[in-house]
Length: 202
Length: 186
Image 1 (cartoon, one colour):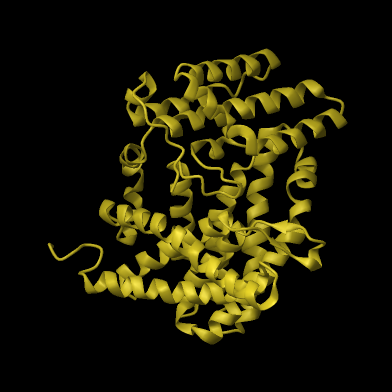
Image 2: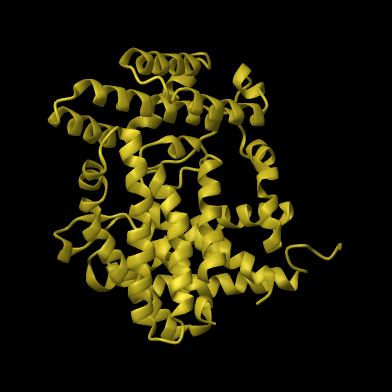
C-alpha cells in the first residue's frame, strides 16, 4: 500500500519523529491567539517554504491539499455570503497551513519511526492486554487485510456484473461482509494454531 | 473468546473501514444517484458487531493507521494533517460513535437485531458523529454552529440514514447466516 512517506535524507528526515510531533503540537497551540489575515498568510508561506526546502519533490507533495479544496471553497463561500471575506480568508489560510504543516511530518517520517515515537501514549491500553508486539501485529494485519477485502469485493462485483450487467450494488454488502468475516475466522484460527500473537517463545 | 481472536477481529474491522473508503462508490437509485462513501458504514458495523470496547479499538486502530500516514480516508486522504483539518471532529466522532453504537447494541442484545441496529446506528452513527464533528468544523472554519450544521451536517444526513439502513441489512444478514460473528450480542 502507498504511504504518504517520501524517502529522503533532508534535515526534516533527520529530525527525531517525537520532536517533530511535539513541535507540531506546540505550533497548533501557539497560533490560536493570532487571528489576523497577514499572520495566517505568513504561516502558510512559512509552511510552503518548509516544503520547498525538501526540493522539487517536496513542492510536488503540496498537492496533498487537493482533496480539501472543495471543503475550503464551501467554507470561504459561507463567509462571503455572510459578507465577511476577511474572516473567510483567515479561516481557509489557517486551515491550509495547519493541514500542510501536519502533513509535512507524514511525508518526512517513516511509519515505523512514527509508531515508535507514539508508543508511550498507548500504555493506558495495556489494560486491554495490548503490548507493542500486539500493536505491530494489528497494524500489519490491517495493512494486509485491506487489499484482500478489496479483492473479495471485486470478485463479488464481477459475479454480479455477469448476472445483471450492472457493476455495483448495495446488494453486495451483506454477502461481502459474510465472506470477509468467514475469512477472518480462518486467519484467527491460523494465528492461534501458530501459538497466537505472542508466539511460542514465551 | 481468546484475545488472539479479538485482535484479528479488531484488525479486520479496521481494515473494513479502510476498504469501504477506498471502494468504488455505490450509487443508490432511491437517493437520487447520490454517491455514498461508505466509510462511516464501516464505523457503524464495527460497533454493531464488536461491541463498545473492541469496536472502539477497531476505529482507534484505523485512525492510528491514518495518522501514521496511510491514505485510508475516503478520497485518499491520510496523515497527521487530517487531524488538523476542518473535519477532524468527525474523526473523533467516528471513535466515540463506534463506542456508543457498540454500547447500545450490547444493551439491546435481547431485543430484535434489526431494532437494535437501527437505534444504535442513528444515535451512535449519526447523532454522536455530528455532535462531535459540527463544533470542531464551526471552530476551525470560523463559522457559527448554525452555519456549520448547514454546511457540514444537513447535507449528509440523508446519506447517513441510508448507511444505517445498509448497516442494519448487513447486521440482519449476519445474524441469520453467521450469528456467532455478532460479538456484541454474545
